[in-house]
Amino acid sequence: DGGITQSPKYLFRKEGQNVTLSCEQNLNHDAMYWYRQDPGQGLRLIYYSQIVNDFQKGDIAEGYSVSREKKESFPLTVTSAQKNPTAFYLCASTPGQGFGTEAFFGQGTRLTVV
Amino acid sequence: QKEVEQDPGPLSVPEGAIVSLNCTYSNSAFQYFMWYRQYSRKGPELLMYTYSSGNKEDGRFTAQVDKSSKYISLFIRDSQPSDSATYLCAMSDDNYGQNFVFGPGTRLSVLP
Image 1 (cartoon, each protein chain N blue to C red):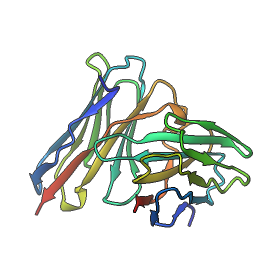
Image 2: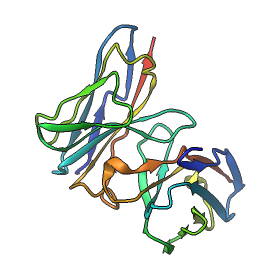
Image 3: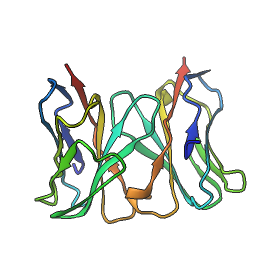
């Protein structure tokens, strides 16, 4: 079945550590997105990539980094520079730039700082 | 003022009730509107997509857009316990994924 797989489902990070969240899709979608979800707030865009080897900052990119070396993969690294990383992270993909009816979301990764 | 506002709930209704979920927005240029359902600790799934104004119906779900009032609604008829979830609205002035603004979501509980 086609879809988006995020791993791990739960992740714990110590202060000062970098951690990487995985997002893999087998939908042959060109565009991929990373969002952060906090209680009482809407999804906020961290980074997006419309094509392999290219990505753009979203609204809250500080303290995060990404790569897009393969079409199916868009990993997100939460660096030690991110001061409040505890959140639910969601990855999404679309065939092209249009979001509309085409966006698929992964099941999310819950990151907790311990 | 936030760009998109939703009553966070929780909203509790008995099974079979008609549910009304709403979002208000401030950007009059928005013309793409979506409703997502998100179960606890899961990713959002698209329920309804509407372009510009008007109504759209899909089974027990009806989406309404009132651009003059900057107000969108999702109605759920004959609500079921399986409808218990958080409902997110999302909207944009174009269809580019990076420009969509999401509301904070309304948590709905349908009690058997």
